[in-house]
Image (cartoon, rainbow over all chains, first blue to last red; front, side):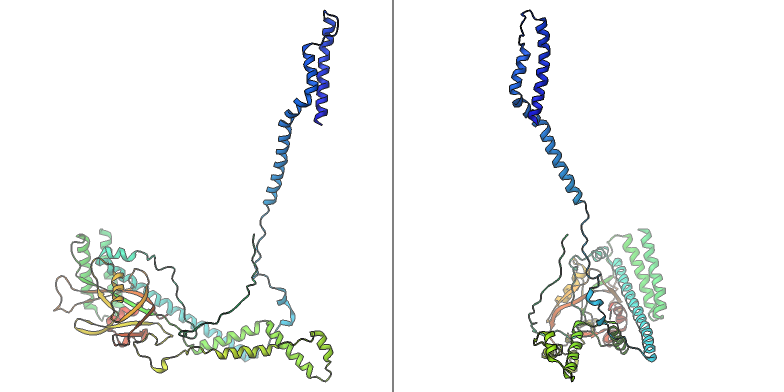
Length: 206
Length: 292
């Protein structure tokens, strides 16, 4: 394509060169068609046009075109990236299909009236028991807090320095770990048997 | 300084009123006097900053608790409710795979024992493999469980001594020590006089480490005292500079430790404290020892 363009350019230039030569030939004193200096340069242009013109075109058009192509690709990539990442499914929220099977249903027993009554009354009694327990706990905690407040008051009356030292938080306290009560007390020098297990949890990556 | 001073002056009065209502006018005389004295002491200390030494001697004490190791026995109502919950959960649940296997095996057994049993058909279905029935698995698991002997829940049947940490595993225990205070040998929470240059919590830690023939590793819960016990010396000992003593208690949880089985130590439940501590002391101490 570039060669054709250069050829066209050549033709244009030669045409342009030809016009003044005609004029000069008409006007010229010599009488013969003299090849003016400009025409000569055009001729030289003819031979060296492909050499001179193409590098110039490469500088302007090709880098621009390549840049355009690259920009278009980048824009496409950005559009693809803008899609939000797929959410990791929470496996606890979806009931697996095998639990929807009907053969799994246990026969719902028909409760006699006395049984259902007994259950209702037991539930009510339990709520009452828990209420008293909760009230007792709240009271106990309230007393403990009151005792602490009194202690701090007395300490303040004693010395301000000790009071400030008491108010400072203890950085070594947290993280606080304590093994809670179990059903049976721990056995002295008991070695738990080594167990093998296969971990089949699915790990999702975004 | 005027505003807080007036607040401090008025608060003891308000406390006195509420305490009177609560304690029922038992220690009114002593408390009134001590409160007014404290009020005057407060005004004195506030007006002359730190120039007047307080007339109260300071003591730091530690309330060391061993938290329960095993769960408590259930009440009858808790028992009934637990049973009910278990039943209801069972009714509302679906069959597990193990149970399904059990049912299938039972069905297969009945089919085998039936008259028109076609063994070829059965074996075509199951590929003629020797399968372990679910019932067999159940039995092997039960055998394995029987091999394991857990530790006994109640060891008190043997009568563990009162000084042992192992007694009453289901309740939280408090450490009591016998000390001579005012020429009397009494049971109280371990305490020691405060020395200048240390915080009260350090006093409490010192108390714990200085207990004879015992190494208790404890975690102290914070820098703040959880309670205070204030008492005045008897009139003959009282002087201008020391009217009485204030004991500040700090809570600590026992993490590890052992002690000799000698007399000075006692691990006591909250309900049994009454038999060992003095009534006014017990009144203050009972509040912050939680039995939860």
